[in-house]
Length: 80
Image 1 (cartoon, one colour):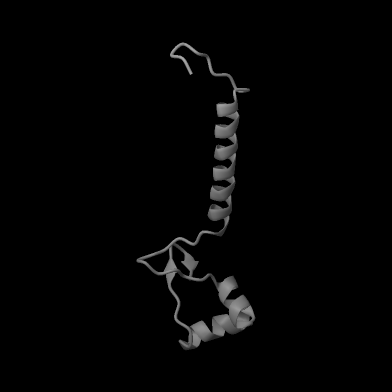
Image 2 (image 1 turned 180 degrees about the vertical axis):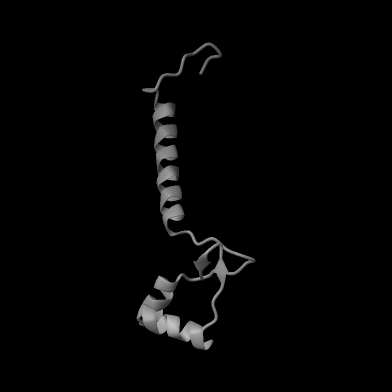
């Protein structure tokens, strides 16, 4: 490639770069869709996730919270 060469979108190097960027974007989108934010190095489950994993109804989960059977945290109005 010379110093004054013009690179267009149809240039093989640009096509390869575009494909790499699209692949990276897809990976980031998949990660963002499944990423779990960590608080203090710990990952917290939502009530829905706890119910699913323990096969509980939401009412039973709430009863366990009320009785102190399962600990929970309220962060920014969200119960984890």
